[in-house]
Image (cartoon, rainbow, N blue to C red):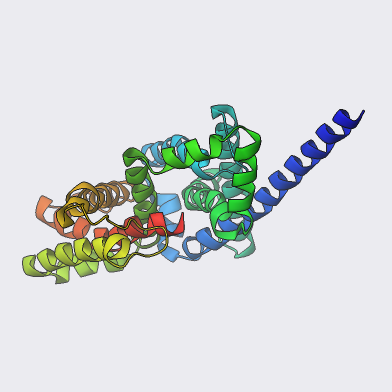
Length: 295
């Protein structure tokens, strides 16, 4: 009977942590998604964006959330089933949060077509769902304690997962998440296109160099919490070549993809595409560098 009572208490505690995770997820989706929900360009893009591109973005969001859920779900995950569950729940939170806020703001109206409703909600649900998962790390004050406790109960799996989370591929993935998050906030705006037309090639080169310097400074030189301090025996160029430069390439790729999805590169010369991508990669690189500091 005592063992059964202990199991019931553990199950209730686990359910309580999961519900708390859901609430933090809703708050995270609101905090991270609200700036985009109140952006006029995204309201229009929800209706004008090419349906194939919107569908592709929605489909790609599932594996992105799945991998992210393995790192920070609503509760500590140990199997791919739990990670997939958290990813689906986060997507659902993103959809519901986007629909409620857009309806409350009068962006969604009863007279609109179903296509317009779906488009506006779908384009907003992606950042909101990412924010729902990020809510665990940003709003969960007990995260480290809970994770350690869960890892101890499971025979030290927490340490193994921490090692996995700092693997090279996971580092690049987290950089991509950070770059995507900031890129989504500014890519739909007309200012990105305007800035790219105002810039010269020298401005573009300076932007690239400053972006790389800031990325390197954010993560390594300034030794922020969550950054990577180099040992005395490690060459100074090692971090630049292994992490900073690949991270900037990731930010460029994310920026190019985001601009393509939003139709910002249609009927545009390749030189202007490079300029626009460089402009968007500036905030994208900052997001990539900050990813390991905040995720």
